[in-house]
Length: 370
Ligand SMILES: Cc1cc2nc3c(=O)[nH]c(=O)nc-3n(C[C@H](O)[C@H](O)[C@H](O)COP(=O)(O)OP(=O)(O)OC[C@H]3O[C@@H](n4cnc5c(N)ncnc54)[C@H](O)[C@@H]3O)c2cc1C
Image 1: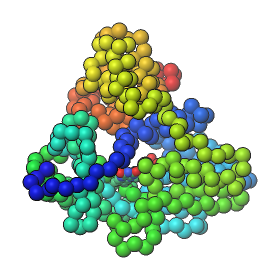
Image 2: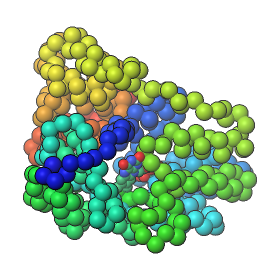
Image 3: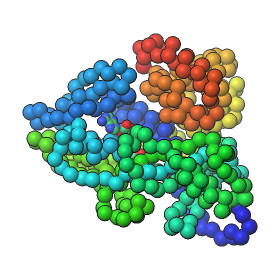
Image 4: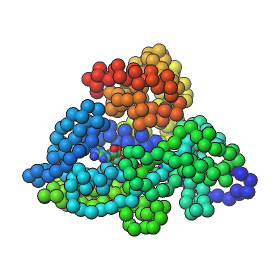
């Protein structure tokens, strides 16, 4: 850091790759009996004879199917109000405040594994986090947002704001030229009438409605950090309708592949390398971080790198892509590169095209195996 910063406070917090968290929760749900429909949009939700009838449309080929249920949980994030008013045609009025937040990724600015949180003159905080070994992630911004959340993207002003803040703390100066990746999202905050975007409540709000005798639970806001608390709270809200629903169970429950104490991650890396001596340490670390004990599903009986098949750049081989298509619903290159991993930071251009081609050629065959 620049000269002059001599004091700080240290505390511990959690960090997670959001893409892995979503995929692992979906696998966990499937293993517990849920049907997962990727690339499927619910275009209509109506109650018929006390039962929810959802018309769901594949965004791949437009095929439609009806899914029925005793209860509907509207967890559509920034689309929650739209879904409530348009697809459900509910007369309940809950408004949300959409607040955009953006991040930038730059080559790494410091060489240790701690994060920084900076308090700025505008009373906002901005963090700088070690990211995917060679990078630093800097975020976020807070701006009121209008429009379709699917179209959200960072503005030049936000890039400059984040670079400027980073430059006021770090010795290594950055500008928009150093930015290798950006991503933005929309926070669906329950509208509590706060005047400034950064002051709107970040707490989640759960609202149960009953339409023609069938319950619907609408979820506003939320944090990744408290997702299990939110989910248990949601179940509690529904237990009035379904006493048989059961109590809280997630405390201490591990996600698929996470069935070892977290302080034993290094031992897991060594175990993997003992079983598969041709895998380098950094490759093994990535596999353990992403898949935990599920790595054997991916590496199978391989005894050499050649056995893992085609290499698509970095340490991504056919065997991993195959695993992601069979077990984790991956269909397109971006699913593998961004929505199941962050390998998109390293695999681009011709390598990405080769991956797209391979996936398109193998999707039918692998769909049968899944
Ligand atoms: C910029 C930013 C920074 C954040 N930082 C943090 C942080 O540091 N820590 C933290 O804990 N949390 C953070 N959050 C909050 C966190 O991202 C959210 O709590 C989390 O993503 C909520 O997950 P969700 O599944 O409820 O909603 P979402 O992730 O928004 O998912 C909603 C899903 O519903 C789908 N959907 C919408 N309409 C339909 C339909 N008609 N049919 C079918 N599907 C539909 C959408 O495609 C989407 O996949 C941040 C959020 C943003 C925007």
